[in-house]
Length: 120
Image 1 (cartoon, helix red, strand yellow):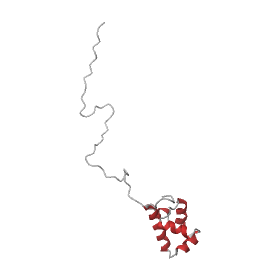
Image 2 (image 1 turned 120 degrees about the horizontal axis):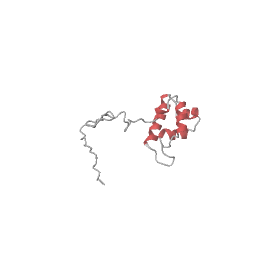
Image 3 (image 1 turned 90 degrees about the horizontal axis):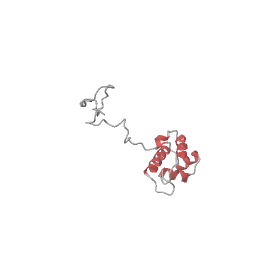
């Protein structure tokens, strides 16, 4: 979330949009919701418009106030690098395990001959 002095982020605007939708779904005015939540109307309005970042503690309090899970006020996106959701790649290398002590497929067997020791 952005700091108070910074430009609002798209995250702040999204959270604010969800807060406003929750309030309006109950048919409350901004003043009524602020009074019931125990906060100033200006503060709630700043959060709803995304002009002010909503700290996590405030967001949790408002989520409880609207009887909604906090996740309902946050944007959700598809995971980008989640290995579980990635489709298998075609042409990938298959890994095969071999029993211990067995030679690798295609590996040359080197003929180990005892080294000739120079006679002394």
